[in-house]
Length: 474
Image (cartoon, rainbow, N blue to C red; front, side, top):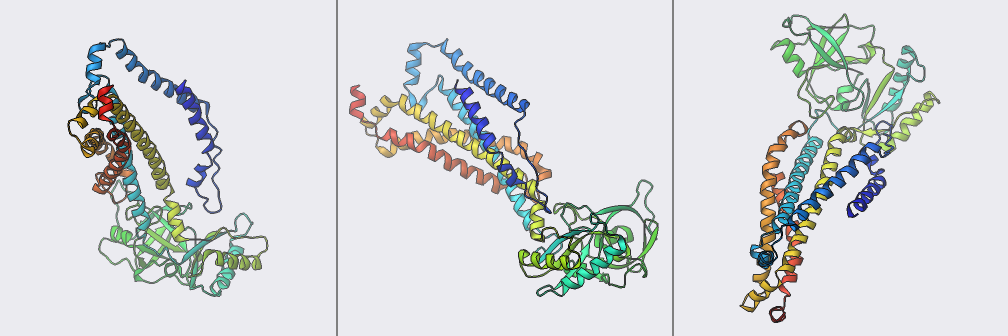
C-alpha cells in the first residue's frame, strides 16, 4: 500500500511539474518549444512496475530473515547496538551505503557538467559577444525577389547605421551558434591536389561589408569586403586561418584562387579562426563570400552598439515599418545571449543530473538518519551503561556520529570507484574538464559530509539525553 501511494504521489508531482520543462528550453528566434507533457501509458506502466518490483524486493529480504530468527541470539546481537550491531543491521547499513554511493556519483556528474557549462559560456568564440545584437527580417515569406530584397537591405542598412549609438551594421546569411546552419559545398583550390580519398568540402557564410568589424573577428591579412564587391566586381573570398594552413600549406593564400559551385574567386583576406556551429567545435576550415555577389533574401542583421536590445528593437522595428509596413523584425538579442542559448542542451543535462543528485542525496540522508535513529533506540541500555561508567556527552556524541560517518565513508569510497569508471562516458559532453576533475570529486565529498553530519546529529544528540539511572533501572 505504501508503494502504491508513493507511486501515485510521484505521478501527481510529475504531472504538476510539466510546465517546468519549458524553462529548460527557452524560445529562440521567436520560436517557443511546445512541450505538451502528456504521461504516456507505457511510462506509467513502467513506473508502476518498477515501484512494485522494488517493494517486493525490499520486502522479501526481511521476510526471509524473519523466518530464520533465533530469538535469544537476535536479542543478544541487537543489544550491542551502536558499537557492534550485526544481524539484520547489515541490510539496513548496506542499503544506506548504496544510497550514499549513488548520490555521490550523481553529485560528481553534476559538478563535472556544471564546470563544463561554465567554461563553455566563458570561452572566447573568436568574436565579440558583448555589444553586438542580431535580428532577422524574413523577405522570402514576404515574396521579395532577389533584386527587391537587395534594395530593401541596402535601404535598411543605411537607416540602421544612421541610428544614434550604432557603430556598424552588416547582413549575413547566418549568425554563429544559431539555429541557422552554414552552407556547405565542395571546393577546388588552385594549386592544391587532394589525396585520392579526399573530396574537399568546406562550410562558408555569405556576409556583407563591415561584417568582420561588426562581429569583432580580426583579419590577420588582406582586407574585408567592401560595397564594390558586388555582382559587377571580381568574385572574392575571405578564408580563415585553418583553411589557409590546410589548403595552401605554408604559401600565402592572398591572391590565390578557389572554386565554389563552378565559379572561381580570389582570396582577398584571412580571418582569425572562430566558432561557427558550437563553442566546443575544433578549429575547422571556413570561408566567407560577399552577400552582394549572391542572391540572399533571408538574412541576419548584425549591429554593433552599446545600447540595450529593447531600445534597439523599437528603433529597428520603426525603420523596417518605414520601408514596408507589412514586415516586422524578429526578436533582437545579444550575441552573448545567443551563445548561452546554444548551450541549452548542456544546461538541461546539468539541471536534470543536479535534480537527480539532490533527490538521491535527500534519500541517502533520510536513510542514514533512519538507520542511526534505530540504532540509538536499540542501544539505550548500552549507552546508559557507558554514561554510568563515566562517558560524557562528547564521548556519546562521537560514538554515534562515528558510526554514521563510517557508513558515509564506505558509500563515498564505493561511489568514487563507480564515478571514476562512469565519468569517462561523459567525455564527449565535457569541455576542457577532466572526467577525474578533483574539484568535482572534492565538492561531492564536501556535500556528502555535510549531509551526513546533519543526518547523524539529531540521533546522536538524542543519545546524549539518555538517563543512565532510569535506563539501568528499566
